Image (cartoon, rainbow, N blue to C red; front, side, top):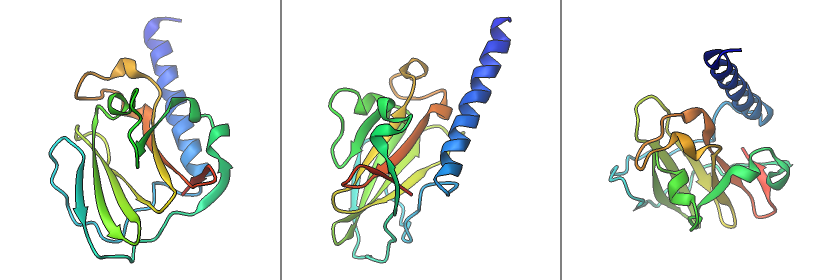
Length: 163
C-alpha cells in the first residue's frame, strides 16, 4: 500500500471511531446549555456570571471513563487544567466558562478554526470535563490541523461518562 492509501484508511477509521463513540452515548453532540449568551473570545479562558439555573445537567451513562478507549488520551480542562499537557491539548480551542448559579457552569470549547464546531457542556458540582487529544503531532502552538481527534468528555464524581 502506498502512503496516501494508508492515510485515507486511518482517517476513515478515526471518523468511524468518533461516530461510534457518540452514537453509543445515545447523543449526536454534548448537551448544550439552555442559555447561550455569547462570551468574549479572547484566546484565554474567560468567565461570565449568570443567574440562570434552568440549564439541564448532563446524565450518567453508567460507563466508567477509566475503562473507555479515550481515557489514556484525556486531559482535565475543567474545573482544573491538567498542568502537564492541558493547555497543549486545547491548542486549537478557546475554553470559556459561564457561571449559571447553584454550582453549575457552562463550559464552551470554541475552535479557533472555522472548520470545526463549538462544544458546550453543562458541568455541575463534582463533575469534570476532559479533553481528548489523541495526537499532539497535528497541533502547532495556537492551532490544531486535525480536529477528528479532539473532543470533550464530561465525567461525574463517580467517574462515569456523562451525556
